[in-house]
Length: 288
Image (cartoon, rainbow, N blue to C red; front, side):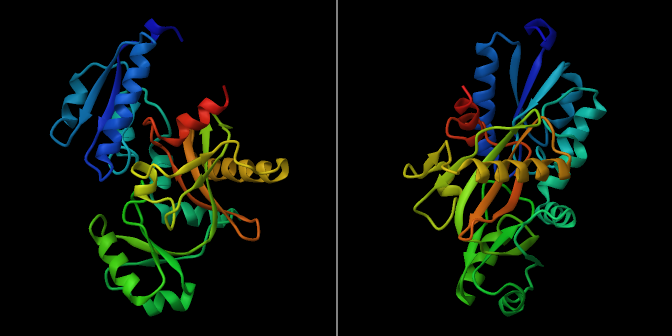
């Protein structure tokens, strides 16, 4: 496709989710890259009050750079399909499935793909009931949030009370998941091909929001240090995880390797970050 054939490209950024700030950063980076390539691209800060104006903006295609609810859950994808505007990334169904961590895990489990055991919870859930199923420690997570927002490690009743409060600030739905200790990996997908995985190293309890966006001590290892057999195992698993959900175009799988060397699927991001410190650009750069 030539530059002129791209037509007018809307870089959809901002949004109204808890990841709005990161979405604005991603949108800025995407816009700069497109304009540097002399593509006619403009930024469109999507807000509830500006959604309707998309229909009259006359864009030829859209680059979705909105993370979280509204931009990554199939809502925006459905709207663009109604407007007959081609867009980047996964379609409506795949976006919705990947955004819901419970549904993702249920699909993976049904296909025999490894993901940590979990229990659906809510504001009335009791710590002892979760421990009866999972034991300590466990992670408490929102079902439909990204950037590790609202995620906590729970090792006691006091931890549980604080973790539940943190989740309730951003979501009414949550789940508890067996805590897996080990190395965390980010594995990017581009056009149905796996890019070099990145091993994440942080001094924090896990690769949380602070480690991702604020901690200068976070280390990113690419090559990731796995031998050829281990690397093939991780890449194959992540590709299966994406295909199981119908993810296409691009995305990122988050996985963890336990102390016994087994890989576990955590989640798939269908609109991963594209900021200067994001993982997909880092992985793409490693390919040359």
